[in-house]
Image (tube, rainbow, N blue to C red):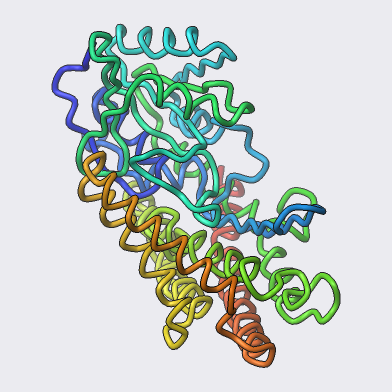
Length: 404
């Protein structure tokens, strides 16, 4: 049971790449231009950019840092994909089950209807081994075929090549994170209302950046101020105390880099959002939207500079961490399932440098504080730039409401 002529592979952000590829196969296009919807368009419609900052400290466990740069605040698992499809005027069909047998039946039901099936999972896979600081949210793939005789599923991911996965492994990966409940999604083709979806997506992004949900200090642009404050706070909450030099601080720094540069195409997804605004401005014939894209291209560069500073080039152990993450992503995107051996070797190297950092962290307390001070200053500049850009978007959406 394999979908004929399925050739939609690749992308940068797993969820929006999956939705882009599934919709392209089904011929869901912009009615006016006849063009398929790009990943950047779907990202801007369903999520857009955002910001949140959380750190979790539980007795007996290593501290965990979560920095989310997209607008998926408090979204339940699978909800962002469903929201994207609904805003376009499509009918998403989500299926969940605690039964692996039923979950497999859901995949086969979608394929029998001629639809690619998007699945979500949160687990290490041989084709993409992850370190804790590389895990952010659920990972989406498209199932476009099942071979019962060989017990293999055919999947499309961010790689430019297909990924084959034993059905047992796919089932285990889908079930590894219980709240996902073996989530799968298909989309019913329909005429889409792209202009309305574009406006709704932009309004959502501007609103959630400026007036985020509670706790307001942790979400939206406020989260940047909280993060900047904690970089230099000399109390128990500050980075000097919260992330002890060794494996804790190494994981925190690597996680910051990963969550800025390894999500989508890097730059905290601001470059992707700039491409969305370019396309939206053209489609809606709103030059002000196109103009609003420029600041986000600059902001994307500032985010990348921040990520580079977190793992300084002049500190070999830290520099190696970001090099390995980039190598892993490039290898997987080029070779897909064929990259498993090479990815495993990189994974082993990551473990080695993490152990080295744990044994002898390469920065003294004075050097750490200098790094934290520099990061605080960069985060405050980002807050200033992000605020101005978000206020521009908000003013545009207010003008739309006034003229309606």
